[in-house]
Length: 492
Image (cartoon, rainbow, N blue to C red; front, side, top):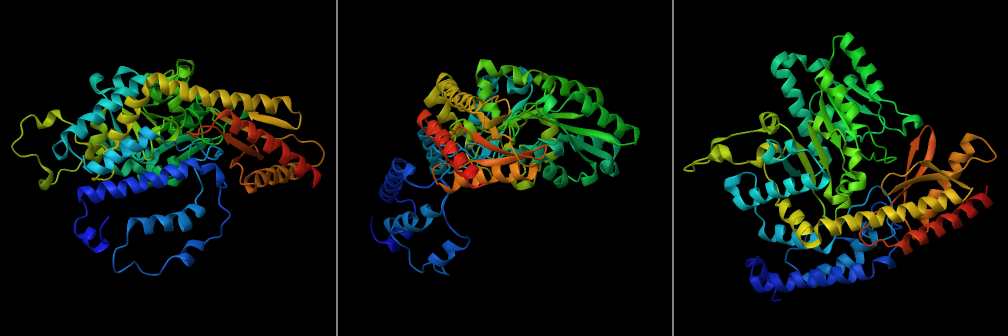
């Protein structure tokens, strides 16, 4: 590979690039081959890594094989292994060979497509890919570039939410005046992702004007139109201005689904911006059997979903579609002289994605998603989604058949929520017992799950969706849950 000092003077030498890239690929090949040998979550203490690494960087460069050995010895043992097939926590964060190849191409080309002129093909590929995805998930034509709308690839739903909140805010303030920002109100459910509360604060909505509307088991924890309507009527009567309503398809805690059409009609009645957050479950919408969950999308102003969760697209990648791109760019655009296009006709006909996001710089995310779609195809992705759903169905059936457990909310996608049934003892005893069960599962190193609390109940979440997960892993997880349930009952 040559001396480190010489390599440093030629940072993109072709032969060094090939050799060191090959070394990284070889390292990852061994990692994925042996990934099940690691505990899913590490047994480590805060500050461990700082004791293993020097306080200052090296004065002279080091060979890549030395660096990779330190990754193997010091970094990997301290990781939570999200790609482990026994990872059932949070939501999946998918990786794939195609996603990795697309990421390599994106990183290797290292273009910065913040505007068309900065990298025309990258900008145009993004437009093609977001239209492909819109058609796959069943969005109305009005969300496509060909229908007057359009899409962008962000890094996360958090960014998509902030951008759409800013667009909704400026749309209203353009007629009411900026001082009216103190009267704007944002609506979400108690199941909505916390990013909406953060986003509302970022765009200047007073914390007192965020309405977190309660849900209940009667609606399977979906947000009802009546509850929103009642909250909006009360605010209007108080002189406040309804601004923004979030409908979620597949909530984080329970996988609940809000009725998009019903909420859309309320939003339209009161002039609110309706955003549909399908970060997790949006991937499932490519399957016809799940299309009904997006019914009413024509009433929405924006929709987002994360291919990096359950669509085999390595971190990070979030699709955001809007019906009126002009509202988004009006809120987010900046046009300094150094970014003006000189000597090119038709400038108004192109997309400059710097005006669709918060930051100026941006990676070539479209390459990654394009490679995934090309490599696996729509049919392959549907089979992938259905495989996970079938595994989750099996796990849910096992819970239903075991009288010790209860399924808290009927499964819709690949998230199963469960707990030990109350038997003897009070509420606090049962909550402590379920906490103890989750801790025992995770301490085994054989699986990793997370929890949620609803109606004062401690709920265990089993989110099936890792790229390497097979039925045998779900069956092993069920055996583990059963074994640990016996243990915690025995030690009561």
